[in-house]
Image (cartoon, rainbow, N blue to C red; front, side, top):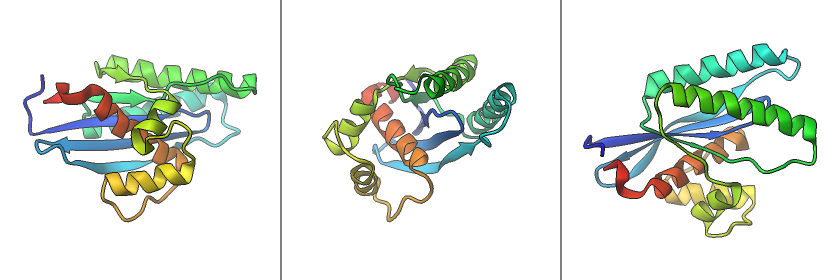
Length: 167
């Protein structure tokens, strides 16, 4: 068990060209705050191999800067567009490998677990998720793209899934 005063988690919402990320920290009194969130954006016309290298470099930089003790990476559901789904799965593979190489334990909540963990409804929409996060984390606004809010929700639920094992 980690006996430090703070614990950090990185939440990741995988995508083919836009990957949401969020770094959350929980202190001894269990208060959770957002340290950083946003998206890793890769131009759509980028050659696939180069895109994966860029994703890996960005993720390594985040992990090295914030040193999370845990990762929560959204599990994927099957997409009707097989070509897009394949790219997202490949991107997710780079994410999982990069985290594993850094010896960061990985949780993989499903979309419905994330929605339910943040809003109490597994069928919540994007606006309900955003509103719930603002209340739960006591923040006025979440800016940016919904990929980044999804990553915040994923990280928040990751803390819940891990329970008290971080302290």
